[in-house]
Length: 315
Image (cartoon, one colour):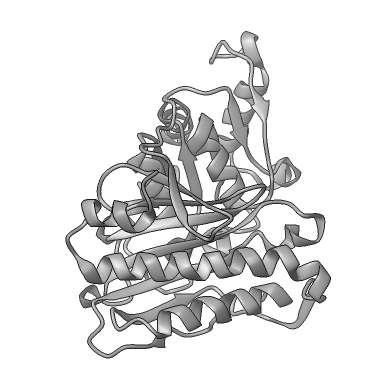
């Protein structure tokens, strides 16, 4: 089987970029072990403070951030780290070619019930500054900590999946992930229905109508509440993920963060043949205004994303 290091040798001739990906992979391999032992070590539960978004931090949010910071601090190619758990960008190696934006532990509210969580990251050229469009990404990926630990990564070509072996080595298990163009699954938090806009309400109503609705097929709804888990399912078998702008999140611009959640996931989904949008603009086209900027996120199988965009086009 192809190892991550071997894949990087053929995927890019930029040794600095390859080293950043390897640093994130090493941090994630360490986190996989930390998460596996966390209940035994008493590392679950709240940390007793909040992050810059005002969200209560889990103990493992803080630990995960520290692990990522440790691995990137030792890499001369990383100039800056932007993290969900840090108020400000952290400047690391002067002259480093890249910056990393990360959610070190996505879905941490699921930790207490042993549901898949993950690490999301985006790699950008440091010369472009902190606020760059998603199209500028040099690489992006996520790690899903589930029954197996999976690293999903894209540089410029296909989306590849690597699995962490018992020996601690990343081995390629999917050469080119492809999101099916059509699907019969959608992922959305229906508990927020009272806040939805007309486009979201219309799309979900049409989908729930099944064979009798405009799509003419039956749908299943899926919602894990961990973005990594929901997007991993979509990358493996299709579907659509929606966290749209609604009446409760409109004042903040959305719920999910652009630099280290929306952009890397859009980069991966589009690289696998899917589409991404806020409903009115492609996610990768957004010009950021802040490192913790929030945006609406709709991404997945192309046919489904186009249906949602059609609803937004109706005004």
